[in-house]
Amino acid sequence: MDVSVEYIPVILNAIRVDTIVGCDLYLQNHINKEIRYVLYCSGTNVVKSDKIEDLQRHRVKTLFIRKEDQKIYLKYVESNLKYIINDNRVDIKEKAYIVYNVAKNIMSDIFEDPRSGEHVERSKGWVSNTIDLIIRSKGSFSGMMSMISYDYYTYTHSVNVSVLGLLFAKYLSFDGGEMQSFGTGLLLHDVGKTQIDPEIINKKERLNDEEFARIKMHVDLGADILKQTGGIDSMSFIPIMQHHEKHNGEGYPNGLKGDAIHKHGKIAGIIDVYDALTTKRTYSDARKPFAALKIMNDEMTGSFDDKYFKDFILFLGSGGERQYQKTKKKFPMSG
Ligand SMILES: [Fe+2]
Image (cartoon, rainbow, N blue to C red; front, side):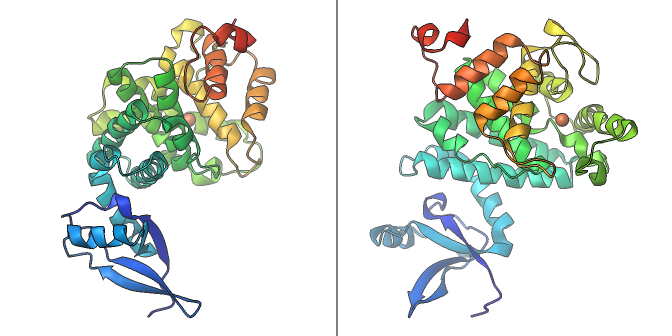
């Protein structure tokens, strides 16, 4: 066995019977305190039901793949996402893990090639499946929230923002179509950052005026790319165009004020800042939810729409479930 090969675990329940995974699947064996990986199913073979059932009988829950095959594997899982989400044998934590990793893979592809129409279609497909999961499954709030990545990359931030936004949209009783446009826009909200010098994006020190002016351009640049690529509905452009607008009119790119900002833009702005504060950045550590909300409340006064900011606090505190009737007593801030 080649010791230089790194193996990573994958969930057995993500493998569908009678499909071809496209990469080799391994079993982990412990022999004399040594870990060995044994080929279980070749990537070019159809996974037969007796193979899966045999593993289930032996209570095996995890298979392994070579790390270098991760993208092949995630693309395979992405193509089966609908079935996995509707599979009762897969628990919510496994589903959340799978959904989150598929999204990270789609986003890393988008940030490599933001003009690809195929990637845009994949984003929309992911949003649609995630809405299904969020609406149908009990425990989707805690399941999805536990997956939120606290290490910041532009693409993990995009996934976090979209997941948080979709959970919050459910809490606010958005209908399915509204959730679809909103979630897609959130996932793609920072695509324009691919056009900005990474040295500016990752700079630890304070940005000078010229650099900040350059950063601000990511909003229009992202919208331009996606307009050219096509396939995105007009509502999805709202979170993209308005996530840096501020309630007091001091945001960008258009300095929109108050209700000139669409509710999807207002919510996008709140979630964008909240996620940035709660993830580890080159210039600051990840903050706990309460600390992040306190900064937003005390140090960013006037930036956010009051009603949606309060709703967002209630949403986080309630585990994603709206607490009718009791709300006023339990949460005095609901006003
Ligand atoms: Fe942004």
